[in-house]
Structures are given as C-alpha cells and as structure tokens.
Length: 233
Image (cartoon, rainbow, N blue to C red; front, side, top):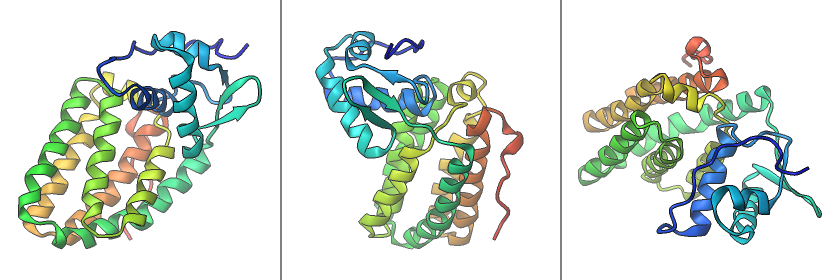
C-alpha cells in the first residue's frame, strides 16, 4: 500500500505558510532519504504524518513533480523518483563547470554593503548545521548560493544552479549533522565571504571546486573518505 514504509516527520508549524512549509518538509525528507526512492506515498497518509489535510500535500507534491523529485501515479499517489550515484556525479560535474566560474565573475560585482547580508546567510548555515536542523540548513544553503550567484547578473544561471541543487540527494545529511561532520562544510561559506572581502577571485574559484567536491563525497554515504572527487583544473 502507498505510504507503508516508515518515515519520521515533525508536525508542522501552522504559523508558517502551509503550502511552502509542506513543500519544504517534503523536499527535505526526499533529499535526506527519509522518504524512500521508488516508494509510493498517498497524500492522505503524508497529511496525517504532518498533521494537515491531504490538499496542501497534493499541492506541494505537484511543486516537487516540477522539480523532478517525485512523479504522479494515477489513482495511487506519488512515487519518489530514484537517482543513481552516476546521476549524482553528473550533477556535480555540471555544477563544477558553472558555479566556480560564475562565482568568480560575481565576486567583483558584489558591493561592500552586501557583505553583511552574505555573512548573515553564512551564519545561518553554520547555526543550522550545529543545531542539526536539516530543513533549515538546506533552505539557508540554497539562499546563500542563490544570493552569491545573483551578483553575476544572470537570472537563468541562478535558476539552473538552484535547480541542480534541488535535485541533488544528500543521503548522509542527518548522519553528518549528528556527528558534526557537516560543520566544516558549513564553515566554508564564511571562507567564501573572506575571499569576497579580499577581492580574491582565484581563491573563491578554487574554494568552490573544493566545496562542491567535498560536499559530494560527504553526501554519498555520510562519510568523508570520498571527499576529493575532482582534481583542480
């Protein structure tokens, strides 16, 4: 039956936007592996787990269909789409081709008055990693990188990079948080802002290569042994 596999999801905070909150929680559960690839889930069963009706779950699932995280199964519910390790490697390769160079180009265009904003976003990433809050961590990470890339002035590039980030699965996320192994990756966001303050374009380019490669190795199994997947170019 749809939704028979075990998953652990906290009740929703009704003070937040309901559809956006459901979408974010579902997305986090998929990315972290709490909702299992290939499994069928019904909107009513997920709604019961969240403490809401089935309607916002269905609406949220349609958003996630557009992101490629789920697919609809007529008269049955929603299936979590699978992603092979090879596909994850391909996404990382694409990110390595576009994000380091785009970030380097954005660096001289970042006004000094925006550095405080970026520092605040980096602080949020570090805080949520230490607090072991995967949902808030993923949201803060997306916000930071989207904002950083936005200074390059190419909206299509920002959307592409964000889409790739949304499609990436992070199976070891909760284990990494529990073991504080994610703290170093979180701190790298502050190192990026240090490069911005120094005007170090080459430094941020190399740091982005390391950051994406390092994170990909950690996400694979929750262990750091495959961190260096890509050599310097």
